[in-house]
Picture 1 (cartoon, rainbow, N blue to C red):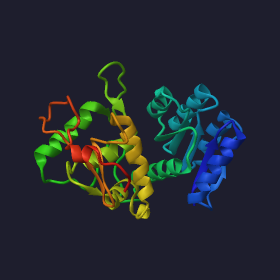
Picture 2 (cartoon, one colour; picture 1 turned 90 degrees about the vertical axis):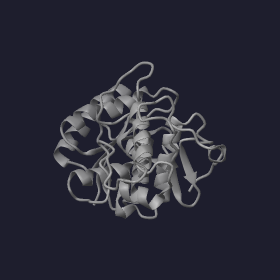
Picture 3 (cartoon, helix red, strand yellow; picture 1 turned 60 degrees about the vertical axis):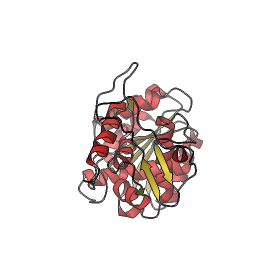
Length: 277
């Protein structure tokens, strides 16, 4: 049975998060501490599976609570960050120890997908699952040995442009953009079979494990978020391309592994492809 803490000042926000979690885990034991201090104490004594932490009402207090909870344990943490053009809040949350984030206003599917993936990663860390990837490094258990040159190029382009979750943050022009563990793992999984379609079932197995079979909406959540982070035109993707009804592929350029001037160049027929799996 899932145990969870919801840390939020706003009563309506707490209710929305609880209602969302019960869609997936109806029998979950959910507590809503009255303050950040109470949340820290309960996280230490109760050792919950999941903490959902709202940063919208009070960012600094929320980040202090997050830091304290992470310092005291390895529970899965999902932060709710304010919406808007400024990415600083969610990036700080990831740097301070959050496993994932969602952006307000909250959508149930986004929260469920991200909570499920961090809980899967926690099971891997605890040795309770053999079907999901290591989201701390983006490594996967299924690595293709074909097309080695393209695969090296694809992985080099990702590593040049995006910071792995286990890498220190850098600021300024040309610094790698930060991705969460699951976002990086999703992208890295595609890059290990460059220019070839990876089925949704394979992605679900590698990120969420066997319990996620058939949950195609989880893959859509991550594909959309990654496109928003890396694509000049997310609705006309050039890099993470949908193969309708099958899966996704990472389109890699013909540049050498050391050339990070571009992530990919796709044919015009692919660049214009839209839609969801």
